[in-house]
Amino acid sequence: MSKALFLALLAALLGTACGPVATSGPVDLSDRETIRIVATTGMVADLVRRVAGERADLEQLMGPGVDPHLYKASERDVLALADADVIFFSGLHLEAKLADVLERIEGRIVTQAVTDPIPREDLLSPPAFEGNYDPHVWFDVALWSVAIEQVRDTLVGLDPAHADAYRANAERTLADLEELDAEVRALAETVPEDKRVLVTAHDAFLYFGRAYGFEVRGLQGISTVSEAGAADVNDLAAYIAEEEIPAIFVESSVPQQTIRAVQEAVRARGFDVRIGGELFSDAMGDPGTPEGTYPGMVRHNVETIVEALRG
Image (cartoon, rainbow, N blue to C red):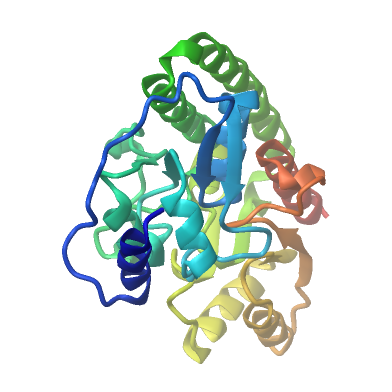
C-alpha cells in the first residue's frame, strides 16, 4: 500500500479527509493461492469462511464481546482493509462508524454488504429506528441464509476459476442452515406460548421473535448508541412484574449493569426475576468454542432462552 493511500485512509478514519481515494479496480485472483479477505463481524466471517474454504486468507476485525454499533477502526484495521482483495461487511448501518472508511476504499477494493440481496420487504423497520432497517437479520436463520448467496456470487465474480468450489460450499452451507432453522423452531415450540417473552439489554432479537414466535422487549433500542434512562428501566420492570416473566437475559457485547438494574427494579415491585443466562447478540463467542461459530452461537442462544423460560 502506498504512503499516500494509507494517509488518505487514515484521514477517513479520523474524519478529516475529503474526496475519494484513487482507485485501481479489483485484480485477477485466479492465480493466487489464497484471497485476502477482511470481514467485519464474527457472523459475516463465519459465512465467508464456509463459502471460501481453503481459498480464504481471512481477517476478522471485530472479535468476541465487541459491539459493532460502537466500533471504530484502528490504524491496524485500516492497513488490513487497504491490503484486502475483498471486504465483506454486514450492512444496514450495523457497522456505522466504519462507513467512512468503507466508502473511501470502495472502488479500489471490492466491498460487499452481505445483506444486499435480502428483499427489503422482509426487513424490519421499527419506528424507534427512524426509518432505517433493523440490521440484526442473522437471528432469523432462514433470512440470514440469503447472505450466503451474496458471498458466493461475489467470490465467483472475483475468482471464476474456483467457481465450482464456491458453489458447492455454498450449497452445503445452505443445507446446514436449513437444518439449523428447523432445530431452532422445534426448540422454540417447547416453550408455552404465554411464556415466550424475551427481555434483553437491547432490541437485537426482533427477527428471532418474528421467526420463532417470541415477543421481544429490549431495554435499549436497536442500536446500543442509544442509552436507557431511569424511566426505561422502570417501565420495563413494571411490565416484567405484571406479566411475571421468569427470566431476563444479559448480552455478551453489552454492559450488564442496565439489565441488572431492571432486575433490582422488578424485585422492588415484589417479584423475583432471574438472569436466565448470557446471550450472544452482536458478537459471537471465543474462537475454538462452539459459540465461536454461527451455528454454535444460535444453538447456545435458543437453548439458553428455552431452558430459562420453561423453568
